[in-house]
Image (cartoon, rainbow, N blue to C red; front, side):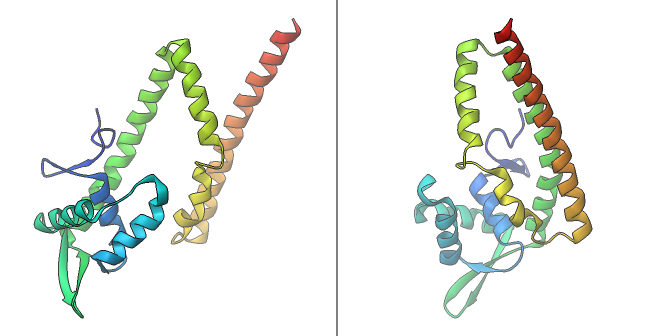
Length: 184
């Protein structure tokens, strides 16, 4: 099973936790001091993840000890920045993400195909919850597009529109088939 599905990435045979991966991504643009990062993480995850200092700082120190981040002291504060080794790790993770997302897709297709009806009912409940405002993947598109040029944005948006139309057509066909079953 893929390393991402188990909850982390592998760097030199040792895992990088999902928290550490978020830390690395957060440091891509500019150095940040630890408490500033902790506050931002807490704001992002609000009531869903109570991130404690006893978890946060040791994870940051492990990244430092492995050479993925470095610390500079400025005005009495420790500022963390991404090292070349950290940037290389993120590049490797990006390449791996595509491979592993394909595996995840195939895994979930197979899971849905083989699952018993009682389990399928629970999955439908989860899908309905995800379809609500609670989880809205498309609400994050502005963040995703922030640094893309106009042509790339249009290309991605066109692909998303096409994909959504295809999915909507499938849903419509199933809906119509179900109505026809009821009529007969």
